[in-house]
Amino acid sequence: MRLDAVTAEIRPRSDWEAVDLGLAMVRRDFWRCFTTWWLVMVVPVAAVGWWLWESPMLWLMVFWWWKPAGSRMVLFELSRRLFGERPAWRATLREIPRAWTRRFFYRFVWARFSPWLPVTLAVEDLEGLRGKAYKQRCIQVTRRGEGVVIWIYLVADMAACWFGFAIVVLVKMFIPEGQDCAWRLAMESWDSENLMSLPLLIVRAMVCCVMLAMSLTDLFITGAGFGVYLNNRSWIEGWDVELAFKRLARRLAKAAMMAALLCAVCLPADCRAAAERDPAGVIHEVMADEAFKVHTVIEKVPVPSRYEFSWKWPQWLTPGNAPQWLALLLVWAVFAILLGAILWLLWQNRRAIMRRRAGLEKPGGSSTARVVMGMDVSPATLPGDVPAAAWALWRQGRQQEALGLLYRGAISRVMEVARVEIQESDTEGDCVRRVDLAGPAAHPDYFRGITGAWSRLAYAGLCPAEREVEVLCQKWPFVERRDE
Image (tube, rainbow, N blue to C red):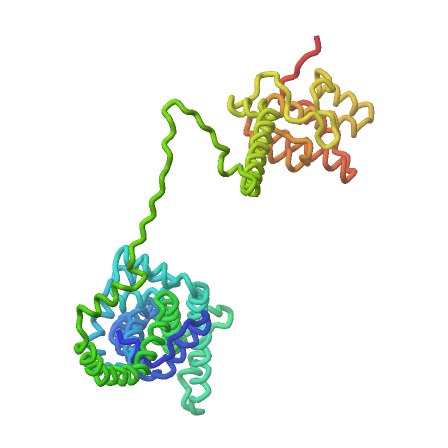
């Protein structure tokens, strides 16, 4: 691969600029790409068309399925022409069998619906990678421009259908008047009550036009994917930097030749001048320099007696080092404060930590909260038989107090029996979610029903029916504690 022979400007681009580069390459060699695309498609399409002439829609599906073979030929032409090559027709024809059979199962079965096909096809055909190396390379080259490629891939077939319909209308407009008998007979035989029962002639014409439209759109989709592939390699491998160095080397080549010629002229004179000097004299002159003198310093250190004890003030505590030991003292003070704060937090939360390590609270322990949404839910404030007391209040006409008692009792029981951790700041919705997470032990269906009845009465002023409240009292699922 010779980067200096490229016929396009290699530089890092944005995603849509890369797509525009691919489209420009297809426009530059349009007829060559269009011809090679149909060279690889015409034999299979003609054979399948002869076999499925009475089923044109199946013919169109097989044509769509075989499109990657044409994409490979377009990629072959674009990649060669990008680097200044002009492949002969003989080389193009030799490439056709490989476009049909190369990794047939993977490309035409396993990865046929891959939206990254316009980019990964270049990794497969141009770099020749397989297996794990192929997957890693595909991840690299689809990291940039992935969204653009997917959008183009999804819009391509839709655009081909509309373009095919436009070709049908255009062909109909150019049919000379009086020579469209077959077309008029087909239109007259079309049942207006069953719009989907199109005459066979019209279906065949539409299928042929859609095939032509697909061939035109696939050229540009393949070119756009190749442009994104080139842009990703430029970002990853620094192609623009390599090209800049090569251009710099070409510009400096003449200057380097002149410098080499000048050195060749001047060096002999310098060599002759150096040869005339005595080597021994040069060595003595260099060694006489001040830098080569050896300086010796002798320092006597007194050795203390074996039993003599001497203590010196630490060097870092001298008055001259006051900023250093003050900073060290400050660091240790901050460390001590942080350690004390952590120990204080652990001591304050020692009971919660012990409960969490034990896995659950002791039986009969206190619940998470005593007041929820302004309502006292402690067991001491509730009667021994909550549903009976609530039904009595309802019969007395005190509906809000009755439902409030049922709701407070339900919250207290799920906290006490099912160990549901309800906080003081929780709303009705938060309580329902916590009960749902607690599972069957908290009776979530019943809790959801009493919550709905209470919310409608408390916030919307909608009093539930007496039968609904009676059912809630009768189906109270929690075991009551009787007063002694």
